[in-house]
Amino acid sequence: MLLCMELKKIWKPKILFVIVLIGLLCGYLRLEFPLKYFPNGHPQKEQYQLMLEWTEKYGITMEEEERLAAEEPLPLLKEQARVLEERDAPIGEDDVRYQAETLEGALFAYDIRYQHYDVDLENCTFAQQKRLRTLYDEKKLDGLLPYEIMENAQQYWRWGAIFLVLNVLVLLAPVITRDTLTDMKRLQYTSRQGRNILRTQFGAMLLSAGGIVVLELLVLGWLYAGLGTWRFWKNPINSFFYGEVYWFDLNFGQYLLFILLIMVLYAGGTAGIAFFISCSSKNYISLVLKMIPVFFFVGMLADVSVEGLFSFSNSLNRLTGIAGIEVWCGILVFLVGMVLGGLAYRRLTRMRDFTEGI
Image (cartoon, rainbow, N blue to C red; front, side, top):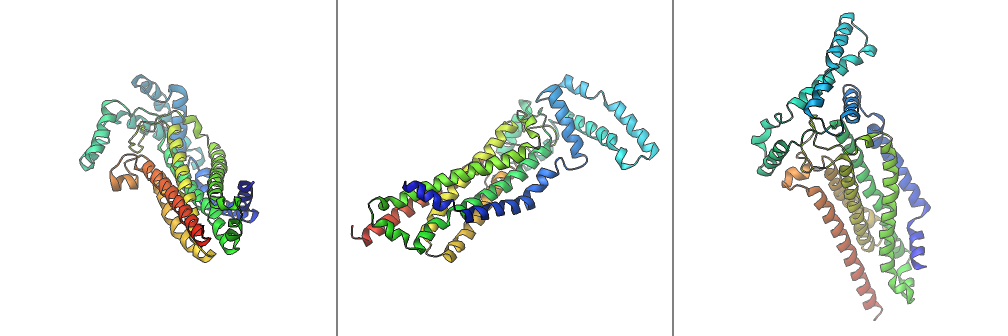
């Protein structure tokens, strides 16, 4: 009964309206582009279509004999492109030129897949060199995956992670502060059942954080599924087609699941931090002043964790040199949130016991 009452206090219509408004505004500003403009023009459109055709025809990787078969349409495409060039064809009839250039470029990328990273070896750390050697020696650069898919996924979900952190803060942070302002805590503490109110409120906040995570991921996932990238679900992220170098041998579907895991970890950590700052704020001004740096720090950390996740170019990886540091940061934020939430609960419980002379 008490838990239901606390959940009703959290899921107030006004707060939900603010969250929906933030979602619509931020979605329009940041998520419209990766959803509406993918693949983004030439030659990305042709590259995406070529990799999709090859995936449907050859599977998730390309073998040497399949490379020979894939080259067969090239002479005809080049001839058609030459004819169009002689006719000075308008842009609308120029797709065949992009197709010829894309096919030729993809075949060239395949041919040099175990060579074009060599120039960077001197500037790599020992661990990076070891990873590159593993990719070369074990022939792990045969994957079919256009790099636009990875860039688009990172761009889309990084902003989703930031919105999720913001929504958790907006939903949960005012809860305890609101009770402090209305002196509800003292009234609740006079009853036997009310003495467990902090524990119940913390549990309600964690449940609500889980609820907002599920709702947002369902919405974001539904919108993202419309792009059709699920057709590359089993394709390895280590592709020969000029992609990033990744620390782990994952397929695209596993990569997306790791992104979702990171988002859940940051949301859980934010819930604990929200409980902590709500317990330590006596008014809304004080609360907002604490929410801003929390959102800036946790949101920025979630952002840099998803952008370039598990790649050599990820900012956290370049700073620390630790493979998988993005997940460890998420775990750290989650643990910090739980510890801070526990400390806030313990501190306020002891203060109340002391004040009431118990």
